[in-house]
Length: 199
Image 1 (tube, rainbow, N blue to C red):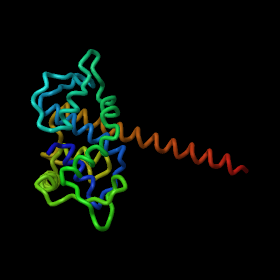
Image 2: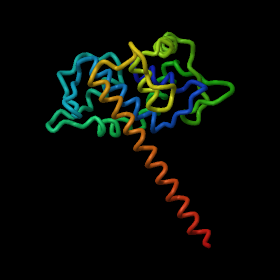
Image 3: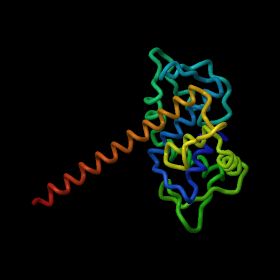
Image 4: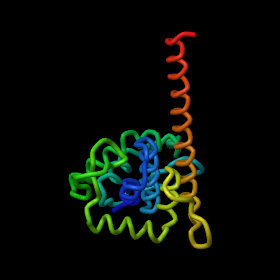
């Protein structure tokens, strides 16, 4: 399992309610962090510079690596999040359903999408839960960016990698930008409705 898969599993917990757009941005950030960890990319300021791609066992990471911009000027992290993140949470949901990690649920609801699903008791779910319970800094920081839990704090939980810190900050900024777009649309829709109602 990857950081993105672990994040998805945490986000679908019954106590959480995460929008697909927010989660998609965070999943794209998680993929980028795993690509950095695998040595597939490095960050040069806010630009994603590809290396020779190492073998990647995960389908989504392979797709992410294949989609990297390999010409100067390289893609900015923020642009990557928006491009790669498009409909990414739905793609992860479908893949996890097909692999049996997500199963139909008789009652309750999944906050992501309209299907009623739950995480099966699999090694994948237990691994995600262990990382979450251990307050693993990267997973905790990405989850906090979409409103799950709190920011990592205290000794031993600070992100000690400058590139990872930069990606997490970009995820925060993108999620805030998405929320600003939502609020602006709500205001515009209300103004339009008022216009139709008249004085």
